[in-house]
Length: 400
Image 1 (tube, helix red, strand yellow):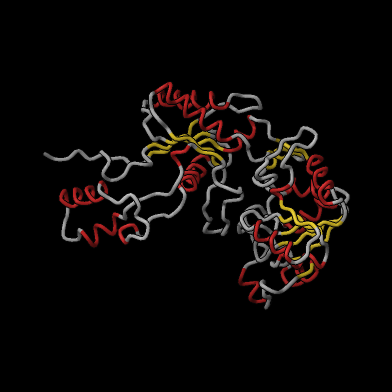
Image 2 (cartoon, helix red, strand yellow):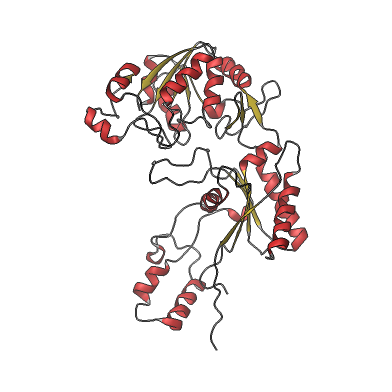
């Protein structure tokens, strides 16, 4: 008797939702929208489906916002309000501009040190080819603004068309602070200008602070240490501060959400009660992938997922079908080959780490993989699908 073979694997659906506002019951809205979609599109909710919710609507529902004045007050209280070194920010109107305005408003002078040839996530100030032509060594050479302009002129961002050096300069001056630019890649360089530093890098922030403290900084704090508590009733994030924030208005940022675990657990519970199915739920921000043309690494959030249900812990444990087909079962074909590979998958070890048959599979956290998939699905514009339903992600070739 011929074995029945399923013709589909993972299916991803963007789920449309109403516009979320502060105070809305997000778990109720998310659950209802997923269930409504399943009825309208005539698909069933299954065990181990994944419901993913974009971080922005979680933060919006909890009202997690802060103004330029809130940021400025915290910066002034922490730094003393004098000359502050601001090092390794990313080049982004959405991610850093409002933060910079708040920092500038909270001090008298900003020494802005930019990494080059690009920022941490790949936004470029100049190409590597131009760097080579100029004979500049990014590991050792320190450039002033004048030297930068002399060697590289005006550089517009490939996608936004913005000269971020001029743009950031105007933002700082508009808040009444002086600004001086330095281009360097070693954190310790900033201490030649000031001993009070805010490091704005995301994924290398702990190393940067360690190096600054070792080199004698009077104060070295990061964006993740600003607005870790409310300022005059503002929003905050006790774990990430300003990291993960996005521009909301010209004088306000939406912060990274705080209460993600409570949200995902409640959605999981609501779906279980409504369907009898045990789904997994996660909150996701930026995916972790790199654009091949602009060389921009998407992940400007401190983590892909700030909250998820317990079933999403860990990494995939998968066999490489190409390896099995080309080596162990090279002499088989057709139904015999399919059955042999399916049996190998059913009997695979619980931990394939280091095994040749798993070589080439993706060794990343489940939440990073699924979050990246969801970020690409929902986009960052006007799709109107802040919730993504992923079905069949945990199925494999042997699943019928």
